[in-house]
Image (cartoon, rainbow, N blue to C red; front, side, top):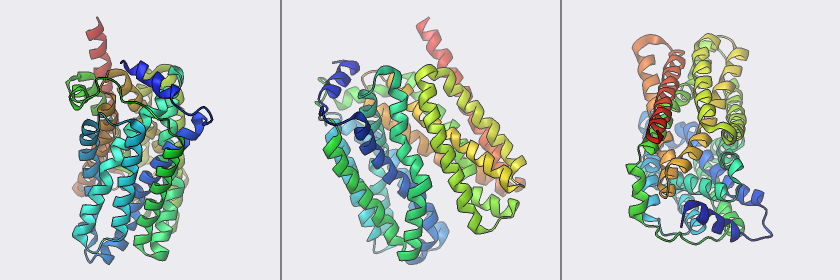
Length: 401
């Protein structure tokens, strides 16, 4: 069975009384839970580090090991679960995610916390990948990217609503409450997916070996590299934006969350626009968004001295986050019959960017170039992603020719 035929069978199996919007809402709720824990962990770092009896640099490994879980879990689960129906897999993934966060809230020691955060990260990439495939399968071909973008809106809205609430709960009720609320959100997702997601059959011929076929496709690797490099620019600035605001802009700590909300609003607006643009002209829209990101990242050093200017620039930098929906859609086009692995690997690539961008930005700061140098690092990474994307397009045209 081809991918298109499998998607038609999936759509036909959806309950007639359940609007597609409700299915996408259920899938996006999982993204909301994942986004809340991923970003709130950073703001809770001082509290759980103290609670577990370690210093903050050591406690930061808790965040790093979650990202490692994402990178490891995405391809591993996609391959091993090749014969599992998508609806069943989504429920199982979010169940494991809920368990990992509940155990994190109950962690008795630092080393147990590391183990539980790794467990929490394992379902992250596979969930987003499979959820994107389900959303695309329920939409007409000219609205696939918009459906994928709406699933990812759960993560972007988390930066506006979920992270502040989880951070407040963590500070007011103790850091364990911050992880407990994420576990509750994950269980709500399990319920919503069970109620609204379509029941689907496994495509004939599905197997771990067929999924591994994605790794033989050069276009898959080039698309993943575009995200791993190009998206790193956003993280290079975002990671140090709070320090830049206090050290360079000279604002009070209470102002920092307001600017971070501006980033979340930009991320949400950019994701919506990216879905719309990708459905009309995916290849030029992706190139345009990478160039857009590079320009605003380069503007960051010039705007950092003024709170109004830097807030606008941070909003615009956030809008570059729409790249995720574009590359997720591109992978559907180039992965052929290895859709699940390719879709899951997209989030491994973004977590690679989440490690690469801050690392390079930190090197620039440590070398004495100042807090605003992260903007130049980010612009360079965005242009690097653009160069890889152009290479991918040229390679595809040469192959077709």
